[in-house]
Amino acid sequence: MSIKDFNTKEEITWCPGCPNFGILQAVKNALSDLVKEKRIKAKDIAIASGIGCHAKIFDYLNVNGFYGLHGRVLPLCFGMKIANPELTVIGFGGDGDTYAEGVSHFIHNCRYNTDMTMLVHNNKAFALTTGQATPTSEKGFVGRSTPLGVKEKPLNPIALAIVNGATFVARGYALDINHLKGIIKEAIKHKGFSFIDILQPCLVFNNFSPYLKKHICRLRNHNVSDFKQAFSKSMEWDYSFEKKAKIPIGIFYKIKRPTFEDQWPQLKKPWYRVKRKINFKKTIKAFK
Ligand SMILES: Cc1ncc(C[n+]2csc(CCOP(=O)(O)OP(=O)(O)O)c2C)c(N)n1
Picture 1 (cartoon, rainbow, N blue to C red):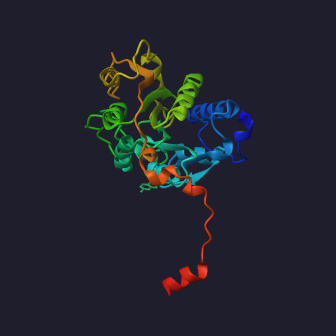
Picture 2: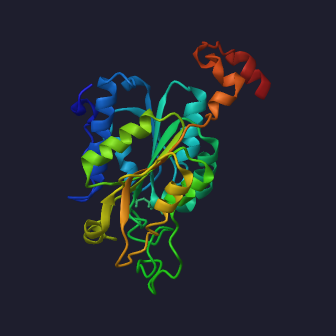
Picture 3: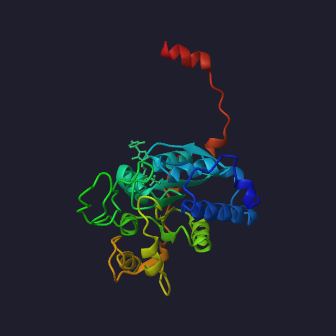
């Protein structure tokens, strides 16, 4: 399947130049590669999205899936994977979606370690609703809900994921498409819960690309299976805009741990392939 085959006919309504285009391209490139390399089957890809600018990606990718509710990407992904463990499940959330409304799902899915991938388009703002602060907004961020500026410390999703048991944790940059494609491929190939926080400045409501250009660096000489090293690297940037900060991108943590589905005998049998005959008459009678 070529990259073009992942296109849909939908008109793309992101703002011109939005870094979400970079994420879309990186995802299409990664999926096309993985299909060609026979690592995944296109028909088995199932995506889920939240609600927000990020979620429009659902309409722009020619794959199966479920356009979800705000904050509920992960329960959908979890359900799809448990219903059919043969699927390649990928979730797309916003930072508001995942770290505000959906933060409890995020923490628990790190613990569960179901074999699926979560991509967060992190623009440090609720963008579709015109720029309110999210948990990853920097201290001082002035938006529609915070005219006096955010007073709290930002949440660090990389550290949160590592501490709570995610087995693949990475950070990418939406405008570094090739690098991001590489991380997405590794995340999908990983057996377990893989999570990528993708920095995606919003050109209208929170354009921090000039800051990123100065501070982003690649993770090098880093042992991805060392918990302490991964955690310490995750703390190098606290999502604020400090002048001296360095923002590492790449894979922070990658380990093997039994997946949720591997530990349930019921899910090991291919019960999901059994064709069941539903007796509608009996079912309707039961509800009368
Ligand atoms: C339960 C619920 N709460 C609030 C909303 C309103 N809402 C729709 S989109 C959105 C902002 C989404 O922000 P984010 O998840 O960061 O994604 P982005 O638009 O930045 O990509 C909000 C608050 C909603 N649709 N459902």
